[in-house]
Image (cartoon, rainbow, N blue to C red):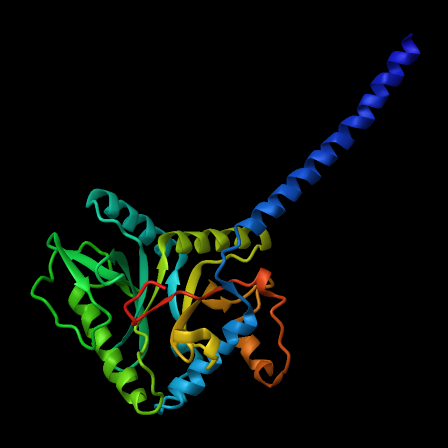
Length: 311
């Protein structure tokens, strides 16, 4: 009986590590599946991101005499913590002011020297126009930012800014944003009109709050999983191909988002830097595949504005 008991205990000791091993493997598999399920729908491959970047240079910058724009002047950098806190701030405003904030718009601008930038504003749906309308609040006054207009006018309401417009240099007032917006029209829209005929010219790209929150979560998960130390989100201007299947997005300006670590743009979980990827003869290689899409850290396919529609 004693021998049987010893044998039973020994068998138990063997089973325990096996059980723990199975449990560990199962947990690892669940984590892998969860990570796969949490991959945002609008993640694009590194090849597509590079193509957007290239198209912007060849069809926009080079066309209007800005071909010598340096890589560093094409990066619009936001710290990840600042970006995350901004989204949380918007959700707080939505509750306290009872405003149904639907998402954010990356609105195109240019500074006094002509350098392109983008700033971020919250949006709410304009049911009448079926349009995601950007807005801010100053002196408790709700101010719309209608980026389907050619130019916007400044306002006298410039104090008590509730910090709803985020730029790379901090928060903007309504008037500061208007000046950037109008500069973009003068510096980048008007010079291209006669050379790239289109029914509309993009001035903003919209994402829902859930999409942006999902992207932030995705970057943080990848940062932990691959020890990438992602600290920011970089925004780049891009241009879609002249593919008729893209319909309104064909040959249209857009922005794509990429991860940033220590002020270096990285585009996949291997930590590949965008500038290195572009310099390694990428544009001379044929048959670039999208097989790296699952490990990509770049994000695109937002809604363009104008036209005034939520497609």
